[in-house]
Length: 110
Image (cartoon, rainbow, N blue to C red; front, side, top):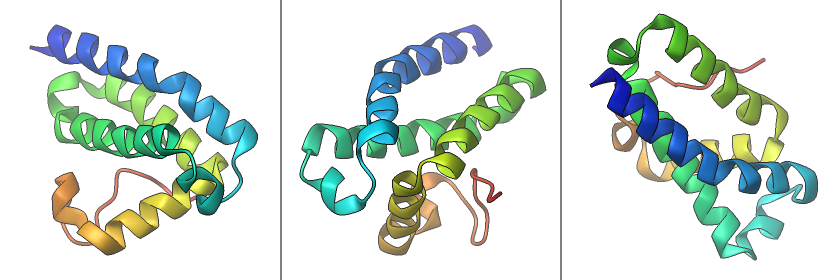
């Protein structure tokens, strides 16, 4: 199971990576990103991927989870629009949609 999860999550992240990089390089605010539906949707897919990785972290193992968690937090901490979209997403759909308990997060503030 660990191998299947590892392979699937890496493939999904690889499909999102160029969009995340483009967002970091060219989109400073939510308004500019909402004008580009594919990039906006890729951020939502990134949140879903992070939630699934968080949910399965015990099955993935500590080394894999630590590496992925560091990567997730890179985007959250260094790309303000992703942090803002995450905060807005939690306000709209709450923690339960992302397998989180109240007050729990898979992102860390600096």
